[in-house]
Image (tube, rainbow, N blue to C red):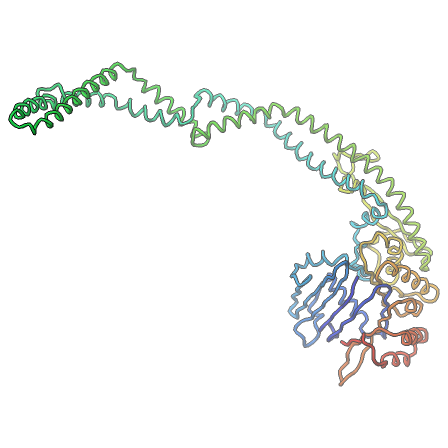
Length: 550
């Protein structure tokens, strides 16, 4: 519900603040007093396009604020710059234009300004119908089934593609598995083989060098062993005269023995090398094979082994593709059957309730002096080739709400064929049609505030009385605003907002105030008699706290 409107520097309004109450509020005043400007400012606050021409002459910007009460208070604010820029805020949070419209669009419906009517969007018509039906449980099921069908179609297409590529892919996987398994690399084998390869590649140099070392150590005439033996003999001789040399004898004897043992070990090692099978070629070949696998499958033996494991998994999955595809088709058929059954059931219920609603709206339009008006809720389907759902022997497009498309059609005059609601002309006739529709659908309409402009255009007398009664009835469940020039409508209002111009210090201001009971009577009397004096009496009445100026 709209609680407060604040306007500053908007068109001819310098400053205006108006509070609103629940129920029916009528807005009256002389032609040109500024009534429509109040609705226009509301329209801009609720998402209509803001234009630089709205900025009051001499001002830098227009400031529009709206306070909404819906469980908790919400504040909407828009700043219109004379440069053409519009800035929007919700609860002081800056919003993009699209986000702002989303947040504000369900607050109010304007009748007479089609761009802000939810009901003028055919996409919303099915929701009005379904809200009337109260089939939330089945609608939720259909929505889930629709998403399941979309997902399973994606999986089926993916599986089909895999099957189509399976033959070529299987051939490749078999080759790769055989290639890896034929070499059968072991973890870190490349490292150990590289060491062995280097050793074998240098074996002749190793043997030659070791033999030379052995000669130096023990076998040549001037070997270290023989020189140490000579040194030992001399030290033993000298130690007979100097006992302090004895430890050196022992140490050199130990060294001599070690050299002899090393010489024997080296000789044995050389003999073993001479008798060793040189498989250098085999090692080189295996290293080449392992390096080839590493280049093709990841750079390391670990990656090669990982690829082998993954190839086995993919091959196993591939072998089960046909079965998987068959299971998916079976699952899809089951989903389609369930979706179709629920959608057909919902379609039947929609048809029945559509007739009931149409009759009620036609009756309401008749009550509003439109006895020849025709209203239809048309339910149809859109054909789609290869759709899995068939209705009345035709493949039909599906959506999250089944396969139905709902749109409101009407004809206001005799002899005219019904046309889509969105294509009807604006004005008083349209506003009365909207009043009839809103009256019937009021319990299922998410919008809490309804604003009617020009609803009394072209009517008077009994028709005006009926429109007033309908607005009053609607206002028991909704907050309703209405600009009117008819006393029959004004007299039904709970709240009467009077808009007028006031001259002060050679400047004209737009003023607005709520009328007390006495002033209400004067205002309604003036509407009956077109009495300028009554206007003057109301305009000069003093002392209303709700009086504001623009």
